[in-house]
Length: 113
Length: 115
Image 1 (cartoon, each protein chain N blue to C red):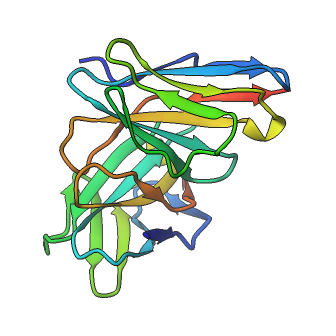
Image 2: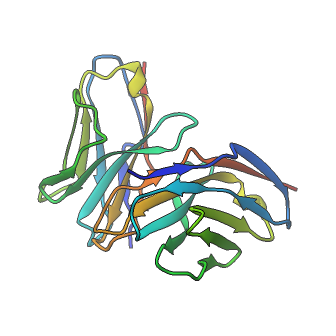
């Protein structure tokens, strides 16, 4: 009964580089959500995906950010040309498809130098 | 759109005492879910308790209980017999009832349990 897994747990990038964050949902879960937490803030929704589909990306910045959840493999949150303001904790959550409960991964802490 | 407000940035409580964390929300939905999540220093998000808005009975999980006042749009968390391990950030969150929807979080309350 592995929980939601995220890797890497910590990621350091220099300005202008790309960051790739991975999320493996709990077994049997086909719904994935990405949230961002800035220092001393609550979590803010970014994007909601089901297998091979983006359902809601209303919280995703229009440029540099993209997400996917392929038929096989983990969900990926990709940030191109990172800037210092992208430094944050990025959390992934998965859901079994029943309304309500989301189970969170341990998060990826991104630091942009 | 849903909004969640936590008006207490920080609170402290003596070990074994009871503490109540406040949360108010706004929504145009009639049915929805409300949650309290705990984020300890490890930063892992842990679900503490969930309330379905159509249920009048307040949810309870061991030492954790809520006071859900639907008309007032209030959803407070009571922690009884506080333990040192309860020290954490506590986030109130809401989601709509229709299908899978994102959670909307408050800014959190930092709770310190003092020995």
